Each structure stands twice: as C-alpha cells, then as structure tokens.
Amino acid sequence: MTVVIHTICSLLSYGAFLAAFVAGVLFLIQERQLKRKTMGVLFRQLPSLQALDRANFLAIGIGFGLLSLGTAFGFLGAGRLLGRWWTWDPKECLTVAMWGSYLALWLVRLRATLRGRRVALLSILGFSLVLFTFIGASRLLSSWHAYL
Amino acid sequence: MHIVVVGLNHHSAPIELRERLAFPRDQLPGALARLRSDVGLQEAMILSTCNRVEIYAGVPELDGTIDRLHRFLSEHGRVAPDGLVPRLYSLSEPESIQHLFAVASGLDSMVLGEGEILHQVKRAYEWARGEGATGKLFNALFQRALNAAKAVRAQTAIGRGCTSIGTVAVTLSEKIFGSLERATVLLIGAGKIGELALKRLAARGVREIRLMNRTLDRAEELASGCRAVPVPLTALPSQLLEADILLTSTSAPSYLVDRGAVAAAMRARRQRPLCIVDLGVPRNVDPAAATLENVYLFDIDDLQGLVDSTQEERRQALDEARAILAGKVERFFSWRREEISSCLCSGPAAAP
Image (cartoon, rainbow over all chains, first blue to last red; front, top):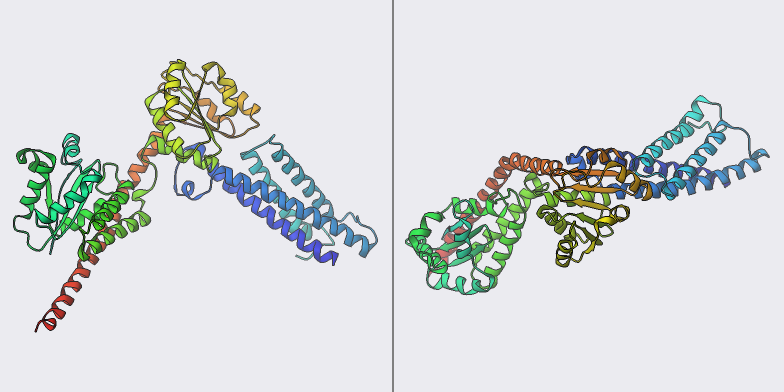
C-alpha cells in the first residue's frame, strides 16, 4: 500500500512540475513578446504574465506537496520492505536534491526575492532535474527504481 | 420591393453637415413615421452615427423615392438641397445591400474595422423595429447584415489589434497584469495624449489613479475629472514603489526618471512588475530602464508602431472580408428570390 501511494504521489508531482515547466516556457515566450514589442498571434493567444506566473507558482506548490508525500511514503515503504529507509539508491539521492531545489524555488518565489523571468527559467531547469530523476536514473545509473 | 440607401458619411461630407443631418434618439420615432407617411416608404431604418447618416428605404416602386428622400433630408437638416445633394450618395440594389453589409462590418468606417459600428447598426435596427418601421424584408436584411458582420470579424483580422495609443497601452498592461482591477496608475504630466491613455485605463477599472504635475493646480484640475489623487512631484521615488503602471506625458527637456531610479524602485518593490508607458517627446524615461528585469517600457514610437501594424494587418484582411461579405450578400439575394417565388406560387392559388 505504501508503495502504491508512493508511486501515485510521485507521478502526480512530476505532472505538476510539468505544468510548472509549461507555464514557465509560456511565460518566457510572452515576456519576450512584450520586451520586443511585438503583438503577433502568440501575443494575443497567450495569457497574461501575471496569470502564467501564478500558474507556475501554484503548480510548484502542489508538486512540492505531492513530492514530499510521495517521498515520505517511499522511505516508509523502504523501511518496511528492506529494513532500512535510506539505501543510497541514485534515485533517492536525486529525489532529495529535487525536493530541496523545488523547496528553494518555492520559497524564493514566495518571499519574492526573485520574480518573473528568473523563476520561469528556474522552473524549467527544475523540470530537467525531474526528467533526469524519472528517466535518467533508471537508464544510466543502477537503481531500485529501474522500471523504464 | 426595392431597397435603396441615401445618406452621407465622412468621405462625402464635412463634420458640420453631418452634425446638422444627425438624428438624435428622441427624433427617430417622428422621423421614421414621416418617412413612411410623407416619403411613402414601406420599410425604413435610420442609421445616425458621428460619421454617417443613412436612410435605408424599402419601397414597392422607385419612381421619385430618391428625390423625396433628398428633400426629406434637406428639410430635416434645414440645408438647401443645392448644398446637400452633391454630398449625398444614393445607392440602389445590389450596391445598397453591399453597402449595408460593409458598413456593419466596419469596412466603411473611418478607422478600418472598428467594432462600435456593429452595435450602432444593431441599435438603429432595433429602434426602427420598435417603431414598427421594419417588416419581413428589413428584419431579414438587417439580421443577415449583423450576422455577416459578426462572421467577418470572427473569421478575419479586420477587427483585431488596437487602433489607438490608449487601447494599445491598455492591451499591453493587461498582458502584463491580467485584470487591471488591482493596478495603480501614476500619470506624470498633463499632456493631452497622456490624459487620453489614462481615460482608457480608467475605463478598465484600475484601482487607483495618481496624478503628478509640475504645477499642482493642473494636477488637481485633471484629478477632479476622473477620481484621481494629485500627488506632488517630489514624491516621485515613493510613488514609483506603489505604481504598477507609470504613464508619463510631459515636455520636460531631459529624463524625469533615469535607469538608476527605476532600478532602485524595482529592488524596493521586490521585483513586482512595472509597466512604463512613456508618451513624452522628448522621452521622459531613460530608455535604458527597459533592460531591467520585470520592467516593461514602451515609448510613443513603440505604441504608434503597434497601431500602424494593426492598421496594416486590417488592410491586408480587407480582400478576405470583402469575399466573405460578397457570399453573404449573394445568400441574401437568393433568400429573397425564394421568398418572391413562393409568394408567386401561393398568390394565384389564394385568388378566386
């Protein structure tokens, strides 16, 4: 059961980070249109910077919550099945790194020390870490989580 | 039944004449009644806007109708026919129908593709219908014209984009902030163009407007016109922290706001986005401020460029719009042919 919750929460959190990534990319496109003063088709179709920024922030918050939950259940499951909660599995390390990165990003955005373009860029960067954890860890590094 | 249109617009007549010929709302019922009783129209509709006055007339026989409409208009405007008639255009089918469809779509407007005319045609038609001045033919005609205009606006670029500095400023701000309901606007200077842009923003329901001017008197005078707060020029640094949209419209010879001031403000406002619309010539805000993050700076040339590109886009959409309208006009005529033939078929059967 813990493994099921662990899997579902983790996958959902990846989905939320994907949403944040998409919002980040759209933000950068719209920002570029504004800075370059072009009002093309893209400019008209895309939402406002404010809306994209809020969507990005919300998605990161939700993703972070789900990831925390998923990771916690992962540790719990590992404790039960393997007898120890930390196994130095590459995916474990990457996930903790990812968890820390998104926490940092979320706090930075919440406290508004960074805003706009940089947050969008970081959320794109963050998603590359998600991809690497999700796919790369299984393929390139030997991991418990090799299901891909 | 023939459909004719007699009228004048911004191409054919100067504003003085258009003003005299205009029909205020309260005169419409009387005018529509006289069109039917005195001029002999079976169906009538009067379109009166600031750029045009047109009478759409449905008559069983044309003979003399156009002359009577000329006389009607010259009496209404108290203008001698000699001065008026050369300024009038009179169109009969099919040009009258094509004209109506083009007018409703904004193709004949001063600002190509403007959308207000669609509402004006709709209102004018509804008033005429309310007075019982329209019948089956005009009801079908105007409904089809309005639908055609909507289709053209939806399917082509004819109504897209912004056509004035003020609406461009609104669109750009809305693409940054979304709704402007929580935005605070700071206007520096009392230039005419700044005032116009401010009114556009105010119409979008901005939360607060602050006015800054070299002389506080003028700021107060402007402020009284549009629920705004006058603030002294010395408060600029602190005002820069609070504003979301900064409009400048002064004739100051050097920059009022330099890059350093904006950079300091951005740090203090924790990078909350700032939209700067600089309408001054020479410019009031250092263009280098545009390189700062979360600062969106537009000068008058940027805005004018966007207005021009809108007009260019609309001009390019003109052929496409005309093609759609031609199809719609054709459909109206084929509808009417069917109506006539069905009347002809049922006609003799009803007679003894």
